[in-house]
Image (cartoon, rainbow, N blue to C red; front, side, top):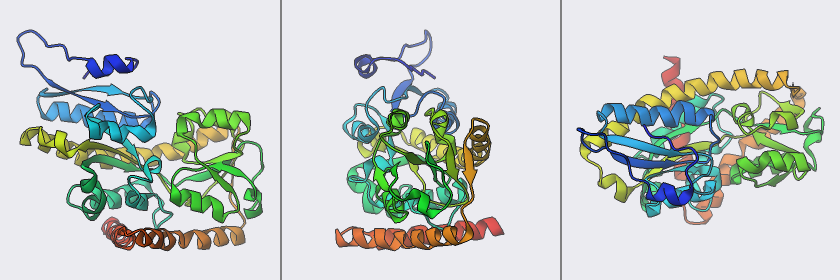
Length: 347
């Protein structure tokens, strides 16, 4: 597999896969995302999926991988896939609230505390043929290839100590996407939309007081040295990291390649989310070792926050319904999928 990590944009677009003498030419697909080199999602999901597709197609499909916004900003990568600049583009749902508002259902503070629980439920409604696909993805001319719903987000601050719910009042917290912005507002803070790669600089300059972030993403973006305090045991919402391909490009692939991509996703997704759960605990401890103190809020404060957060789903759905979108339908489908996944796990 070719993974050009530092190829300039122009060269990336014009690159041609080298052919090995005596062998058939592999079809090389360009994959682009915004994750820094070494990010756990790229290492345990994206690259695993690419490797498996190459294996299942006996080398018929190869990939060139462009991380770290080499091909474009986070919010633009799905558009690059739609227009054919890249073959497969990262679609971080929080960055695409204008294009994928319904997909934000996976980022709500709903009834899941584990990455695999949320991921399995979301994938069941977002995969081709699912209600989210039919309501939003297919009309955009894209299909989701694979996805991960991250472990629940926590509030982490640079210098302001967290002692209770009043600690958040007046803070400026980095939060992306409508649902997490609502969560920030409910605790009395102000949400600030900043792309993940720019967050450390915003913390160091005091542009923001803290972040709404999962542990395993805080480390790759170098946030730990800027942080001092964090919450624990509360679900402030999550983040949906997905990759899409345009329907037009998909139809250009052979049925055998399409099947390989589908099978590779069904293998890679559960493996990656299980690793994410383990890494979440490990990375939290690494942050502790770097000086971050995680605080359990007083019971009364925690109950208040959880009660406030519980209404976000209905508010989210009602807002989308008012715009003529299928908010309630998608929320119901996601909640039913969460119940089914919980039931399957209990068996």
